[in-house]
Image (tube, rainbow, N blue to C red; front, top):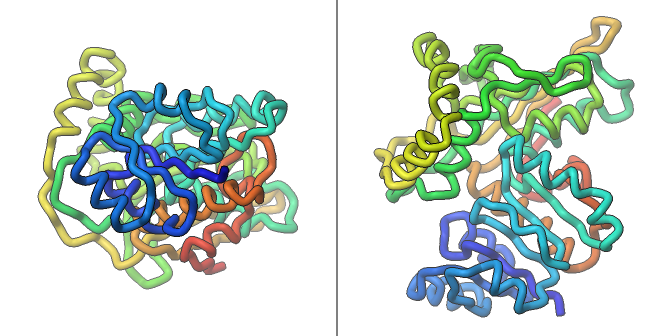
Length: 336
């Protein structure tokens, strides 16, 4: 059996992934009966209605599990794909490399715009070259707004990213850094401009592993970049590191319905700039579709390849397993 289970198949990203996997041996897992039936009718997938996903997985034998619900579910014998972009989850999954290899399993974390976009640009920029001394990556996702609540998974990711404080690589080691630092005003290839600040995302780990650079900074345009916001971010990190405050913030944020505003740009972009010890500096960009659509395309492509035995055992970020061309397969275009 080549069953691909999509956890959270009724959500925005889960249903988009399911649509792209139409024709595969697809199983749709969710908690909303009516919405699950709609997605099943559109994709031909088999619906599994449950509030206890771990038990449902334990009683089945999926070949691939695509996790869109947030918390890692790594205890089965299946190949695994998640959309994580926080340093804690990315590091946790990658630490299981030896165990996954011994078990003949493939674990892929960060299968989305977060991680693959920045990682793929670094891979393409450094291809065939010596290890750079410093790398900076910037993520500028364009998200098409839709009415509705933020939701538990996204709220958890945002709060955890802030509460963990700033991070960067120095001397080949991840170290603490100022949250919201390393401000940059960028001119994109289409002539527009945007500001980015450093935040602790999975892009940081992926960029370091892809380049081998001892010094790495990861920044994005989603964090507030104004002077006042950059001054407040460290205080917010300190407050959100308190478990009770963090839980409260996640509940409140998950229940919020942000106003629908036009997106800030027409494409998603990722940038990498690398500097070598001789002073040479190179820059590259990835132009990608809308961020959620790109994420769905990446996750679906990885799941499909794993279902058809195109991976190899171990734990990986998506570009480390399938190369920079995976971003092109998901609709991206490199500009170097």
